[in-house]
Image 1 (cartoon, rainbow, N blue to C red):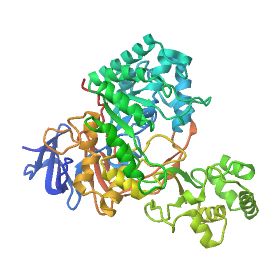
Image 2 (spheres, one colour; image 1 turned 120 degrees about the vertical axis):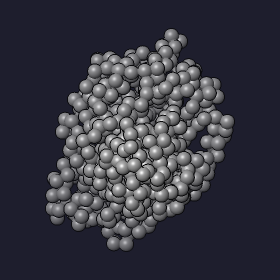
Image 3 (tube, rainbow, N blue to C red; image 1 turned 180 degrees about the vertical axis):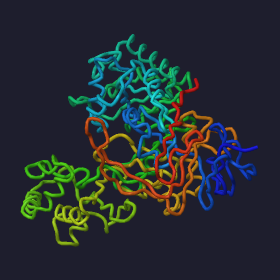
Image 4 (spheres, helix red, strand yellow; image 1 turned 60 degrees about the vertical axis):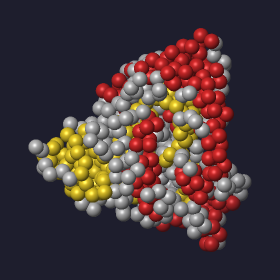
Length: 547
């Protein structure tokens, strides 16, 4: 007897918490056939000698709702071991949607998630009305990785209430209709529902995203439909009292964002205390970004300042920017203009140089802090930024950390049970690149920091996340499970530096990044990435809720 594929001689981590053990993995028909010593030959064999073999990683927070429609391989998450991605986060989705509302939903996604509106309008097939139809459309596109989707409150409210859905209270009939449509979406395959309660998320005219101001009884009616189907309710925003209310009234399984803000060493433990207060005896899970994040500053990303010469620099393309900062007179004028700034959104004490090594340096230390670097060099901070940008031919990037400013507090948060994630893949394409979050977990939190052993760290990336999404056949390496698998070098796996490409529809650009150390990533038994390069395989599935 032979197998379709055998991964031979690796150190297998089962995804359930066990530490690595030498074993082979045999695969047939997209499913794991055997784990252990496999004597039978494979029609194809993958040499994993000296490498680690794990389940594929599950990304609990992406905004690939648009990109999946023109890039079925959804780079770069697929180059960072992600085999299943959850879309529909933050209450913003493209369904349900009537044809006349497409521009509004595209604009909402642009203002909330920084995905170019013209790319959305021209790159999506728009061959759906309801959320089940959207999932059908994604399925027809044959994705390279697995996709699970949630129906968003913003699109839902506008579909039912029209313009009134932005700010007005819904009538009793409208609330019942929204709840009915959520139940219908789950019956058609949505794994849940997402609602935004963060007032900073805005539609193009500056008003809060529909659903932000909705009455709690509206959330409860929807939550009852979710709970009756054992689906997932995602909450975005720091209103823990709202999470408490909906969970208590409905019993729904809940997922919420829990990224930290501030410099307090105790911020993580304080957040954990608040979480435990509402989560005890309930199925409530938190997820947070894995490092300091906010915005990338540099020639390839955002440039600081919004007045006079700096505004003109911001409006230029990458090549024009580099040429401009290499003009001695213009550079001197830029620095002189910056000396007169009052503090704006860019704060040099919050900015950290990612360095010029093989991988970006996400340490938040004094040695790579822009304000400290400028003081040591006797320069204004913009002088230091422009000098390093020039010396690196425009590759230099500085991380303006507005979230997770204290890594000790973040470490405490993860140690207390909050899950890894919120890489926001597919969103904020011109200013953030955190899509490699899972690779950072491997290189930093497991290998360098030692916060978790390989067994426990992988469990959180795989079976733990699969349980949250209600995926009983994913997230573990055991016979009968679907063959979503990573093979990597645990000693070298790492991210590479972000860089800009122009590959979105309508000529739009975005930031992306690669990885090193991955031998292979399999999706449903097919090799999707081999030696860091995407293959032609598109074996992903739309993972529909099993109500």
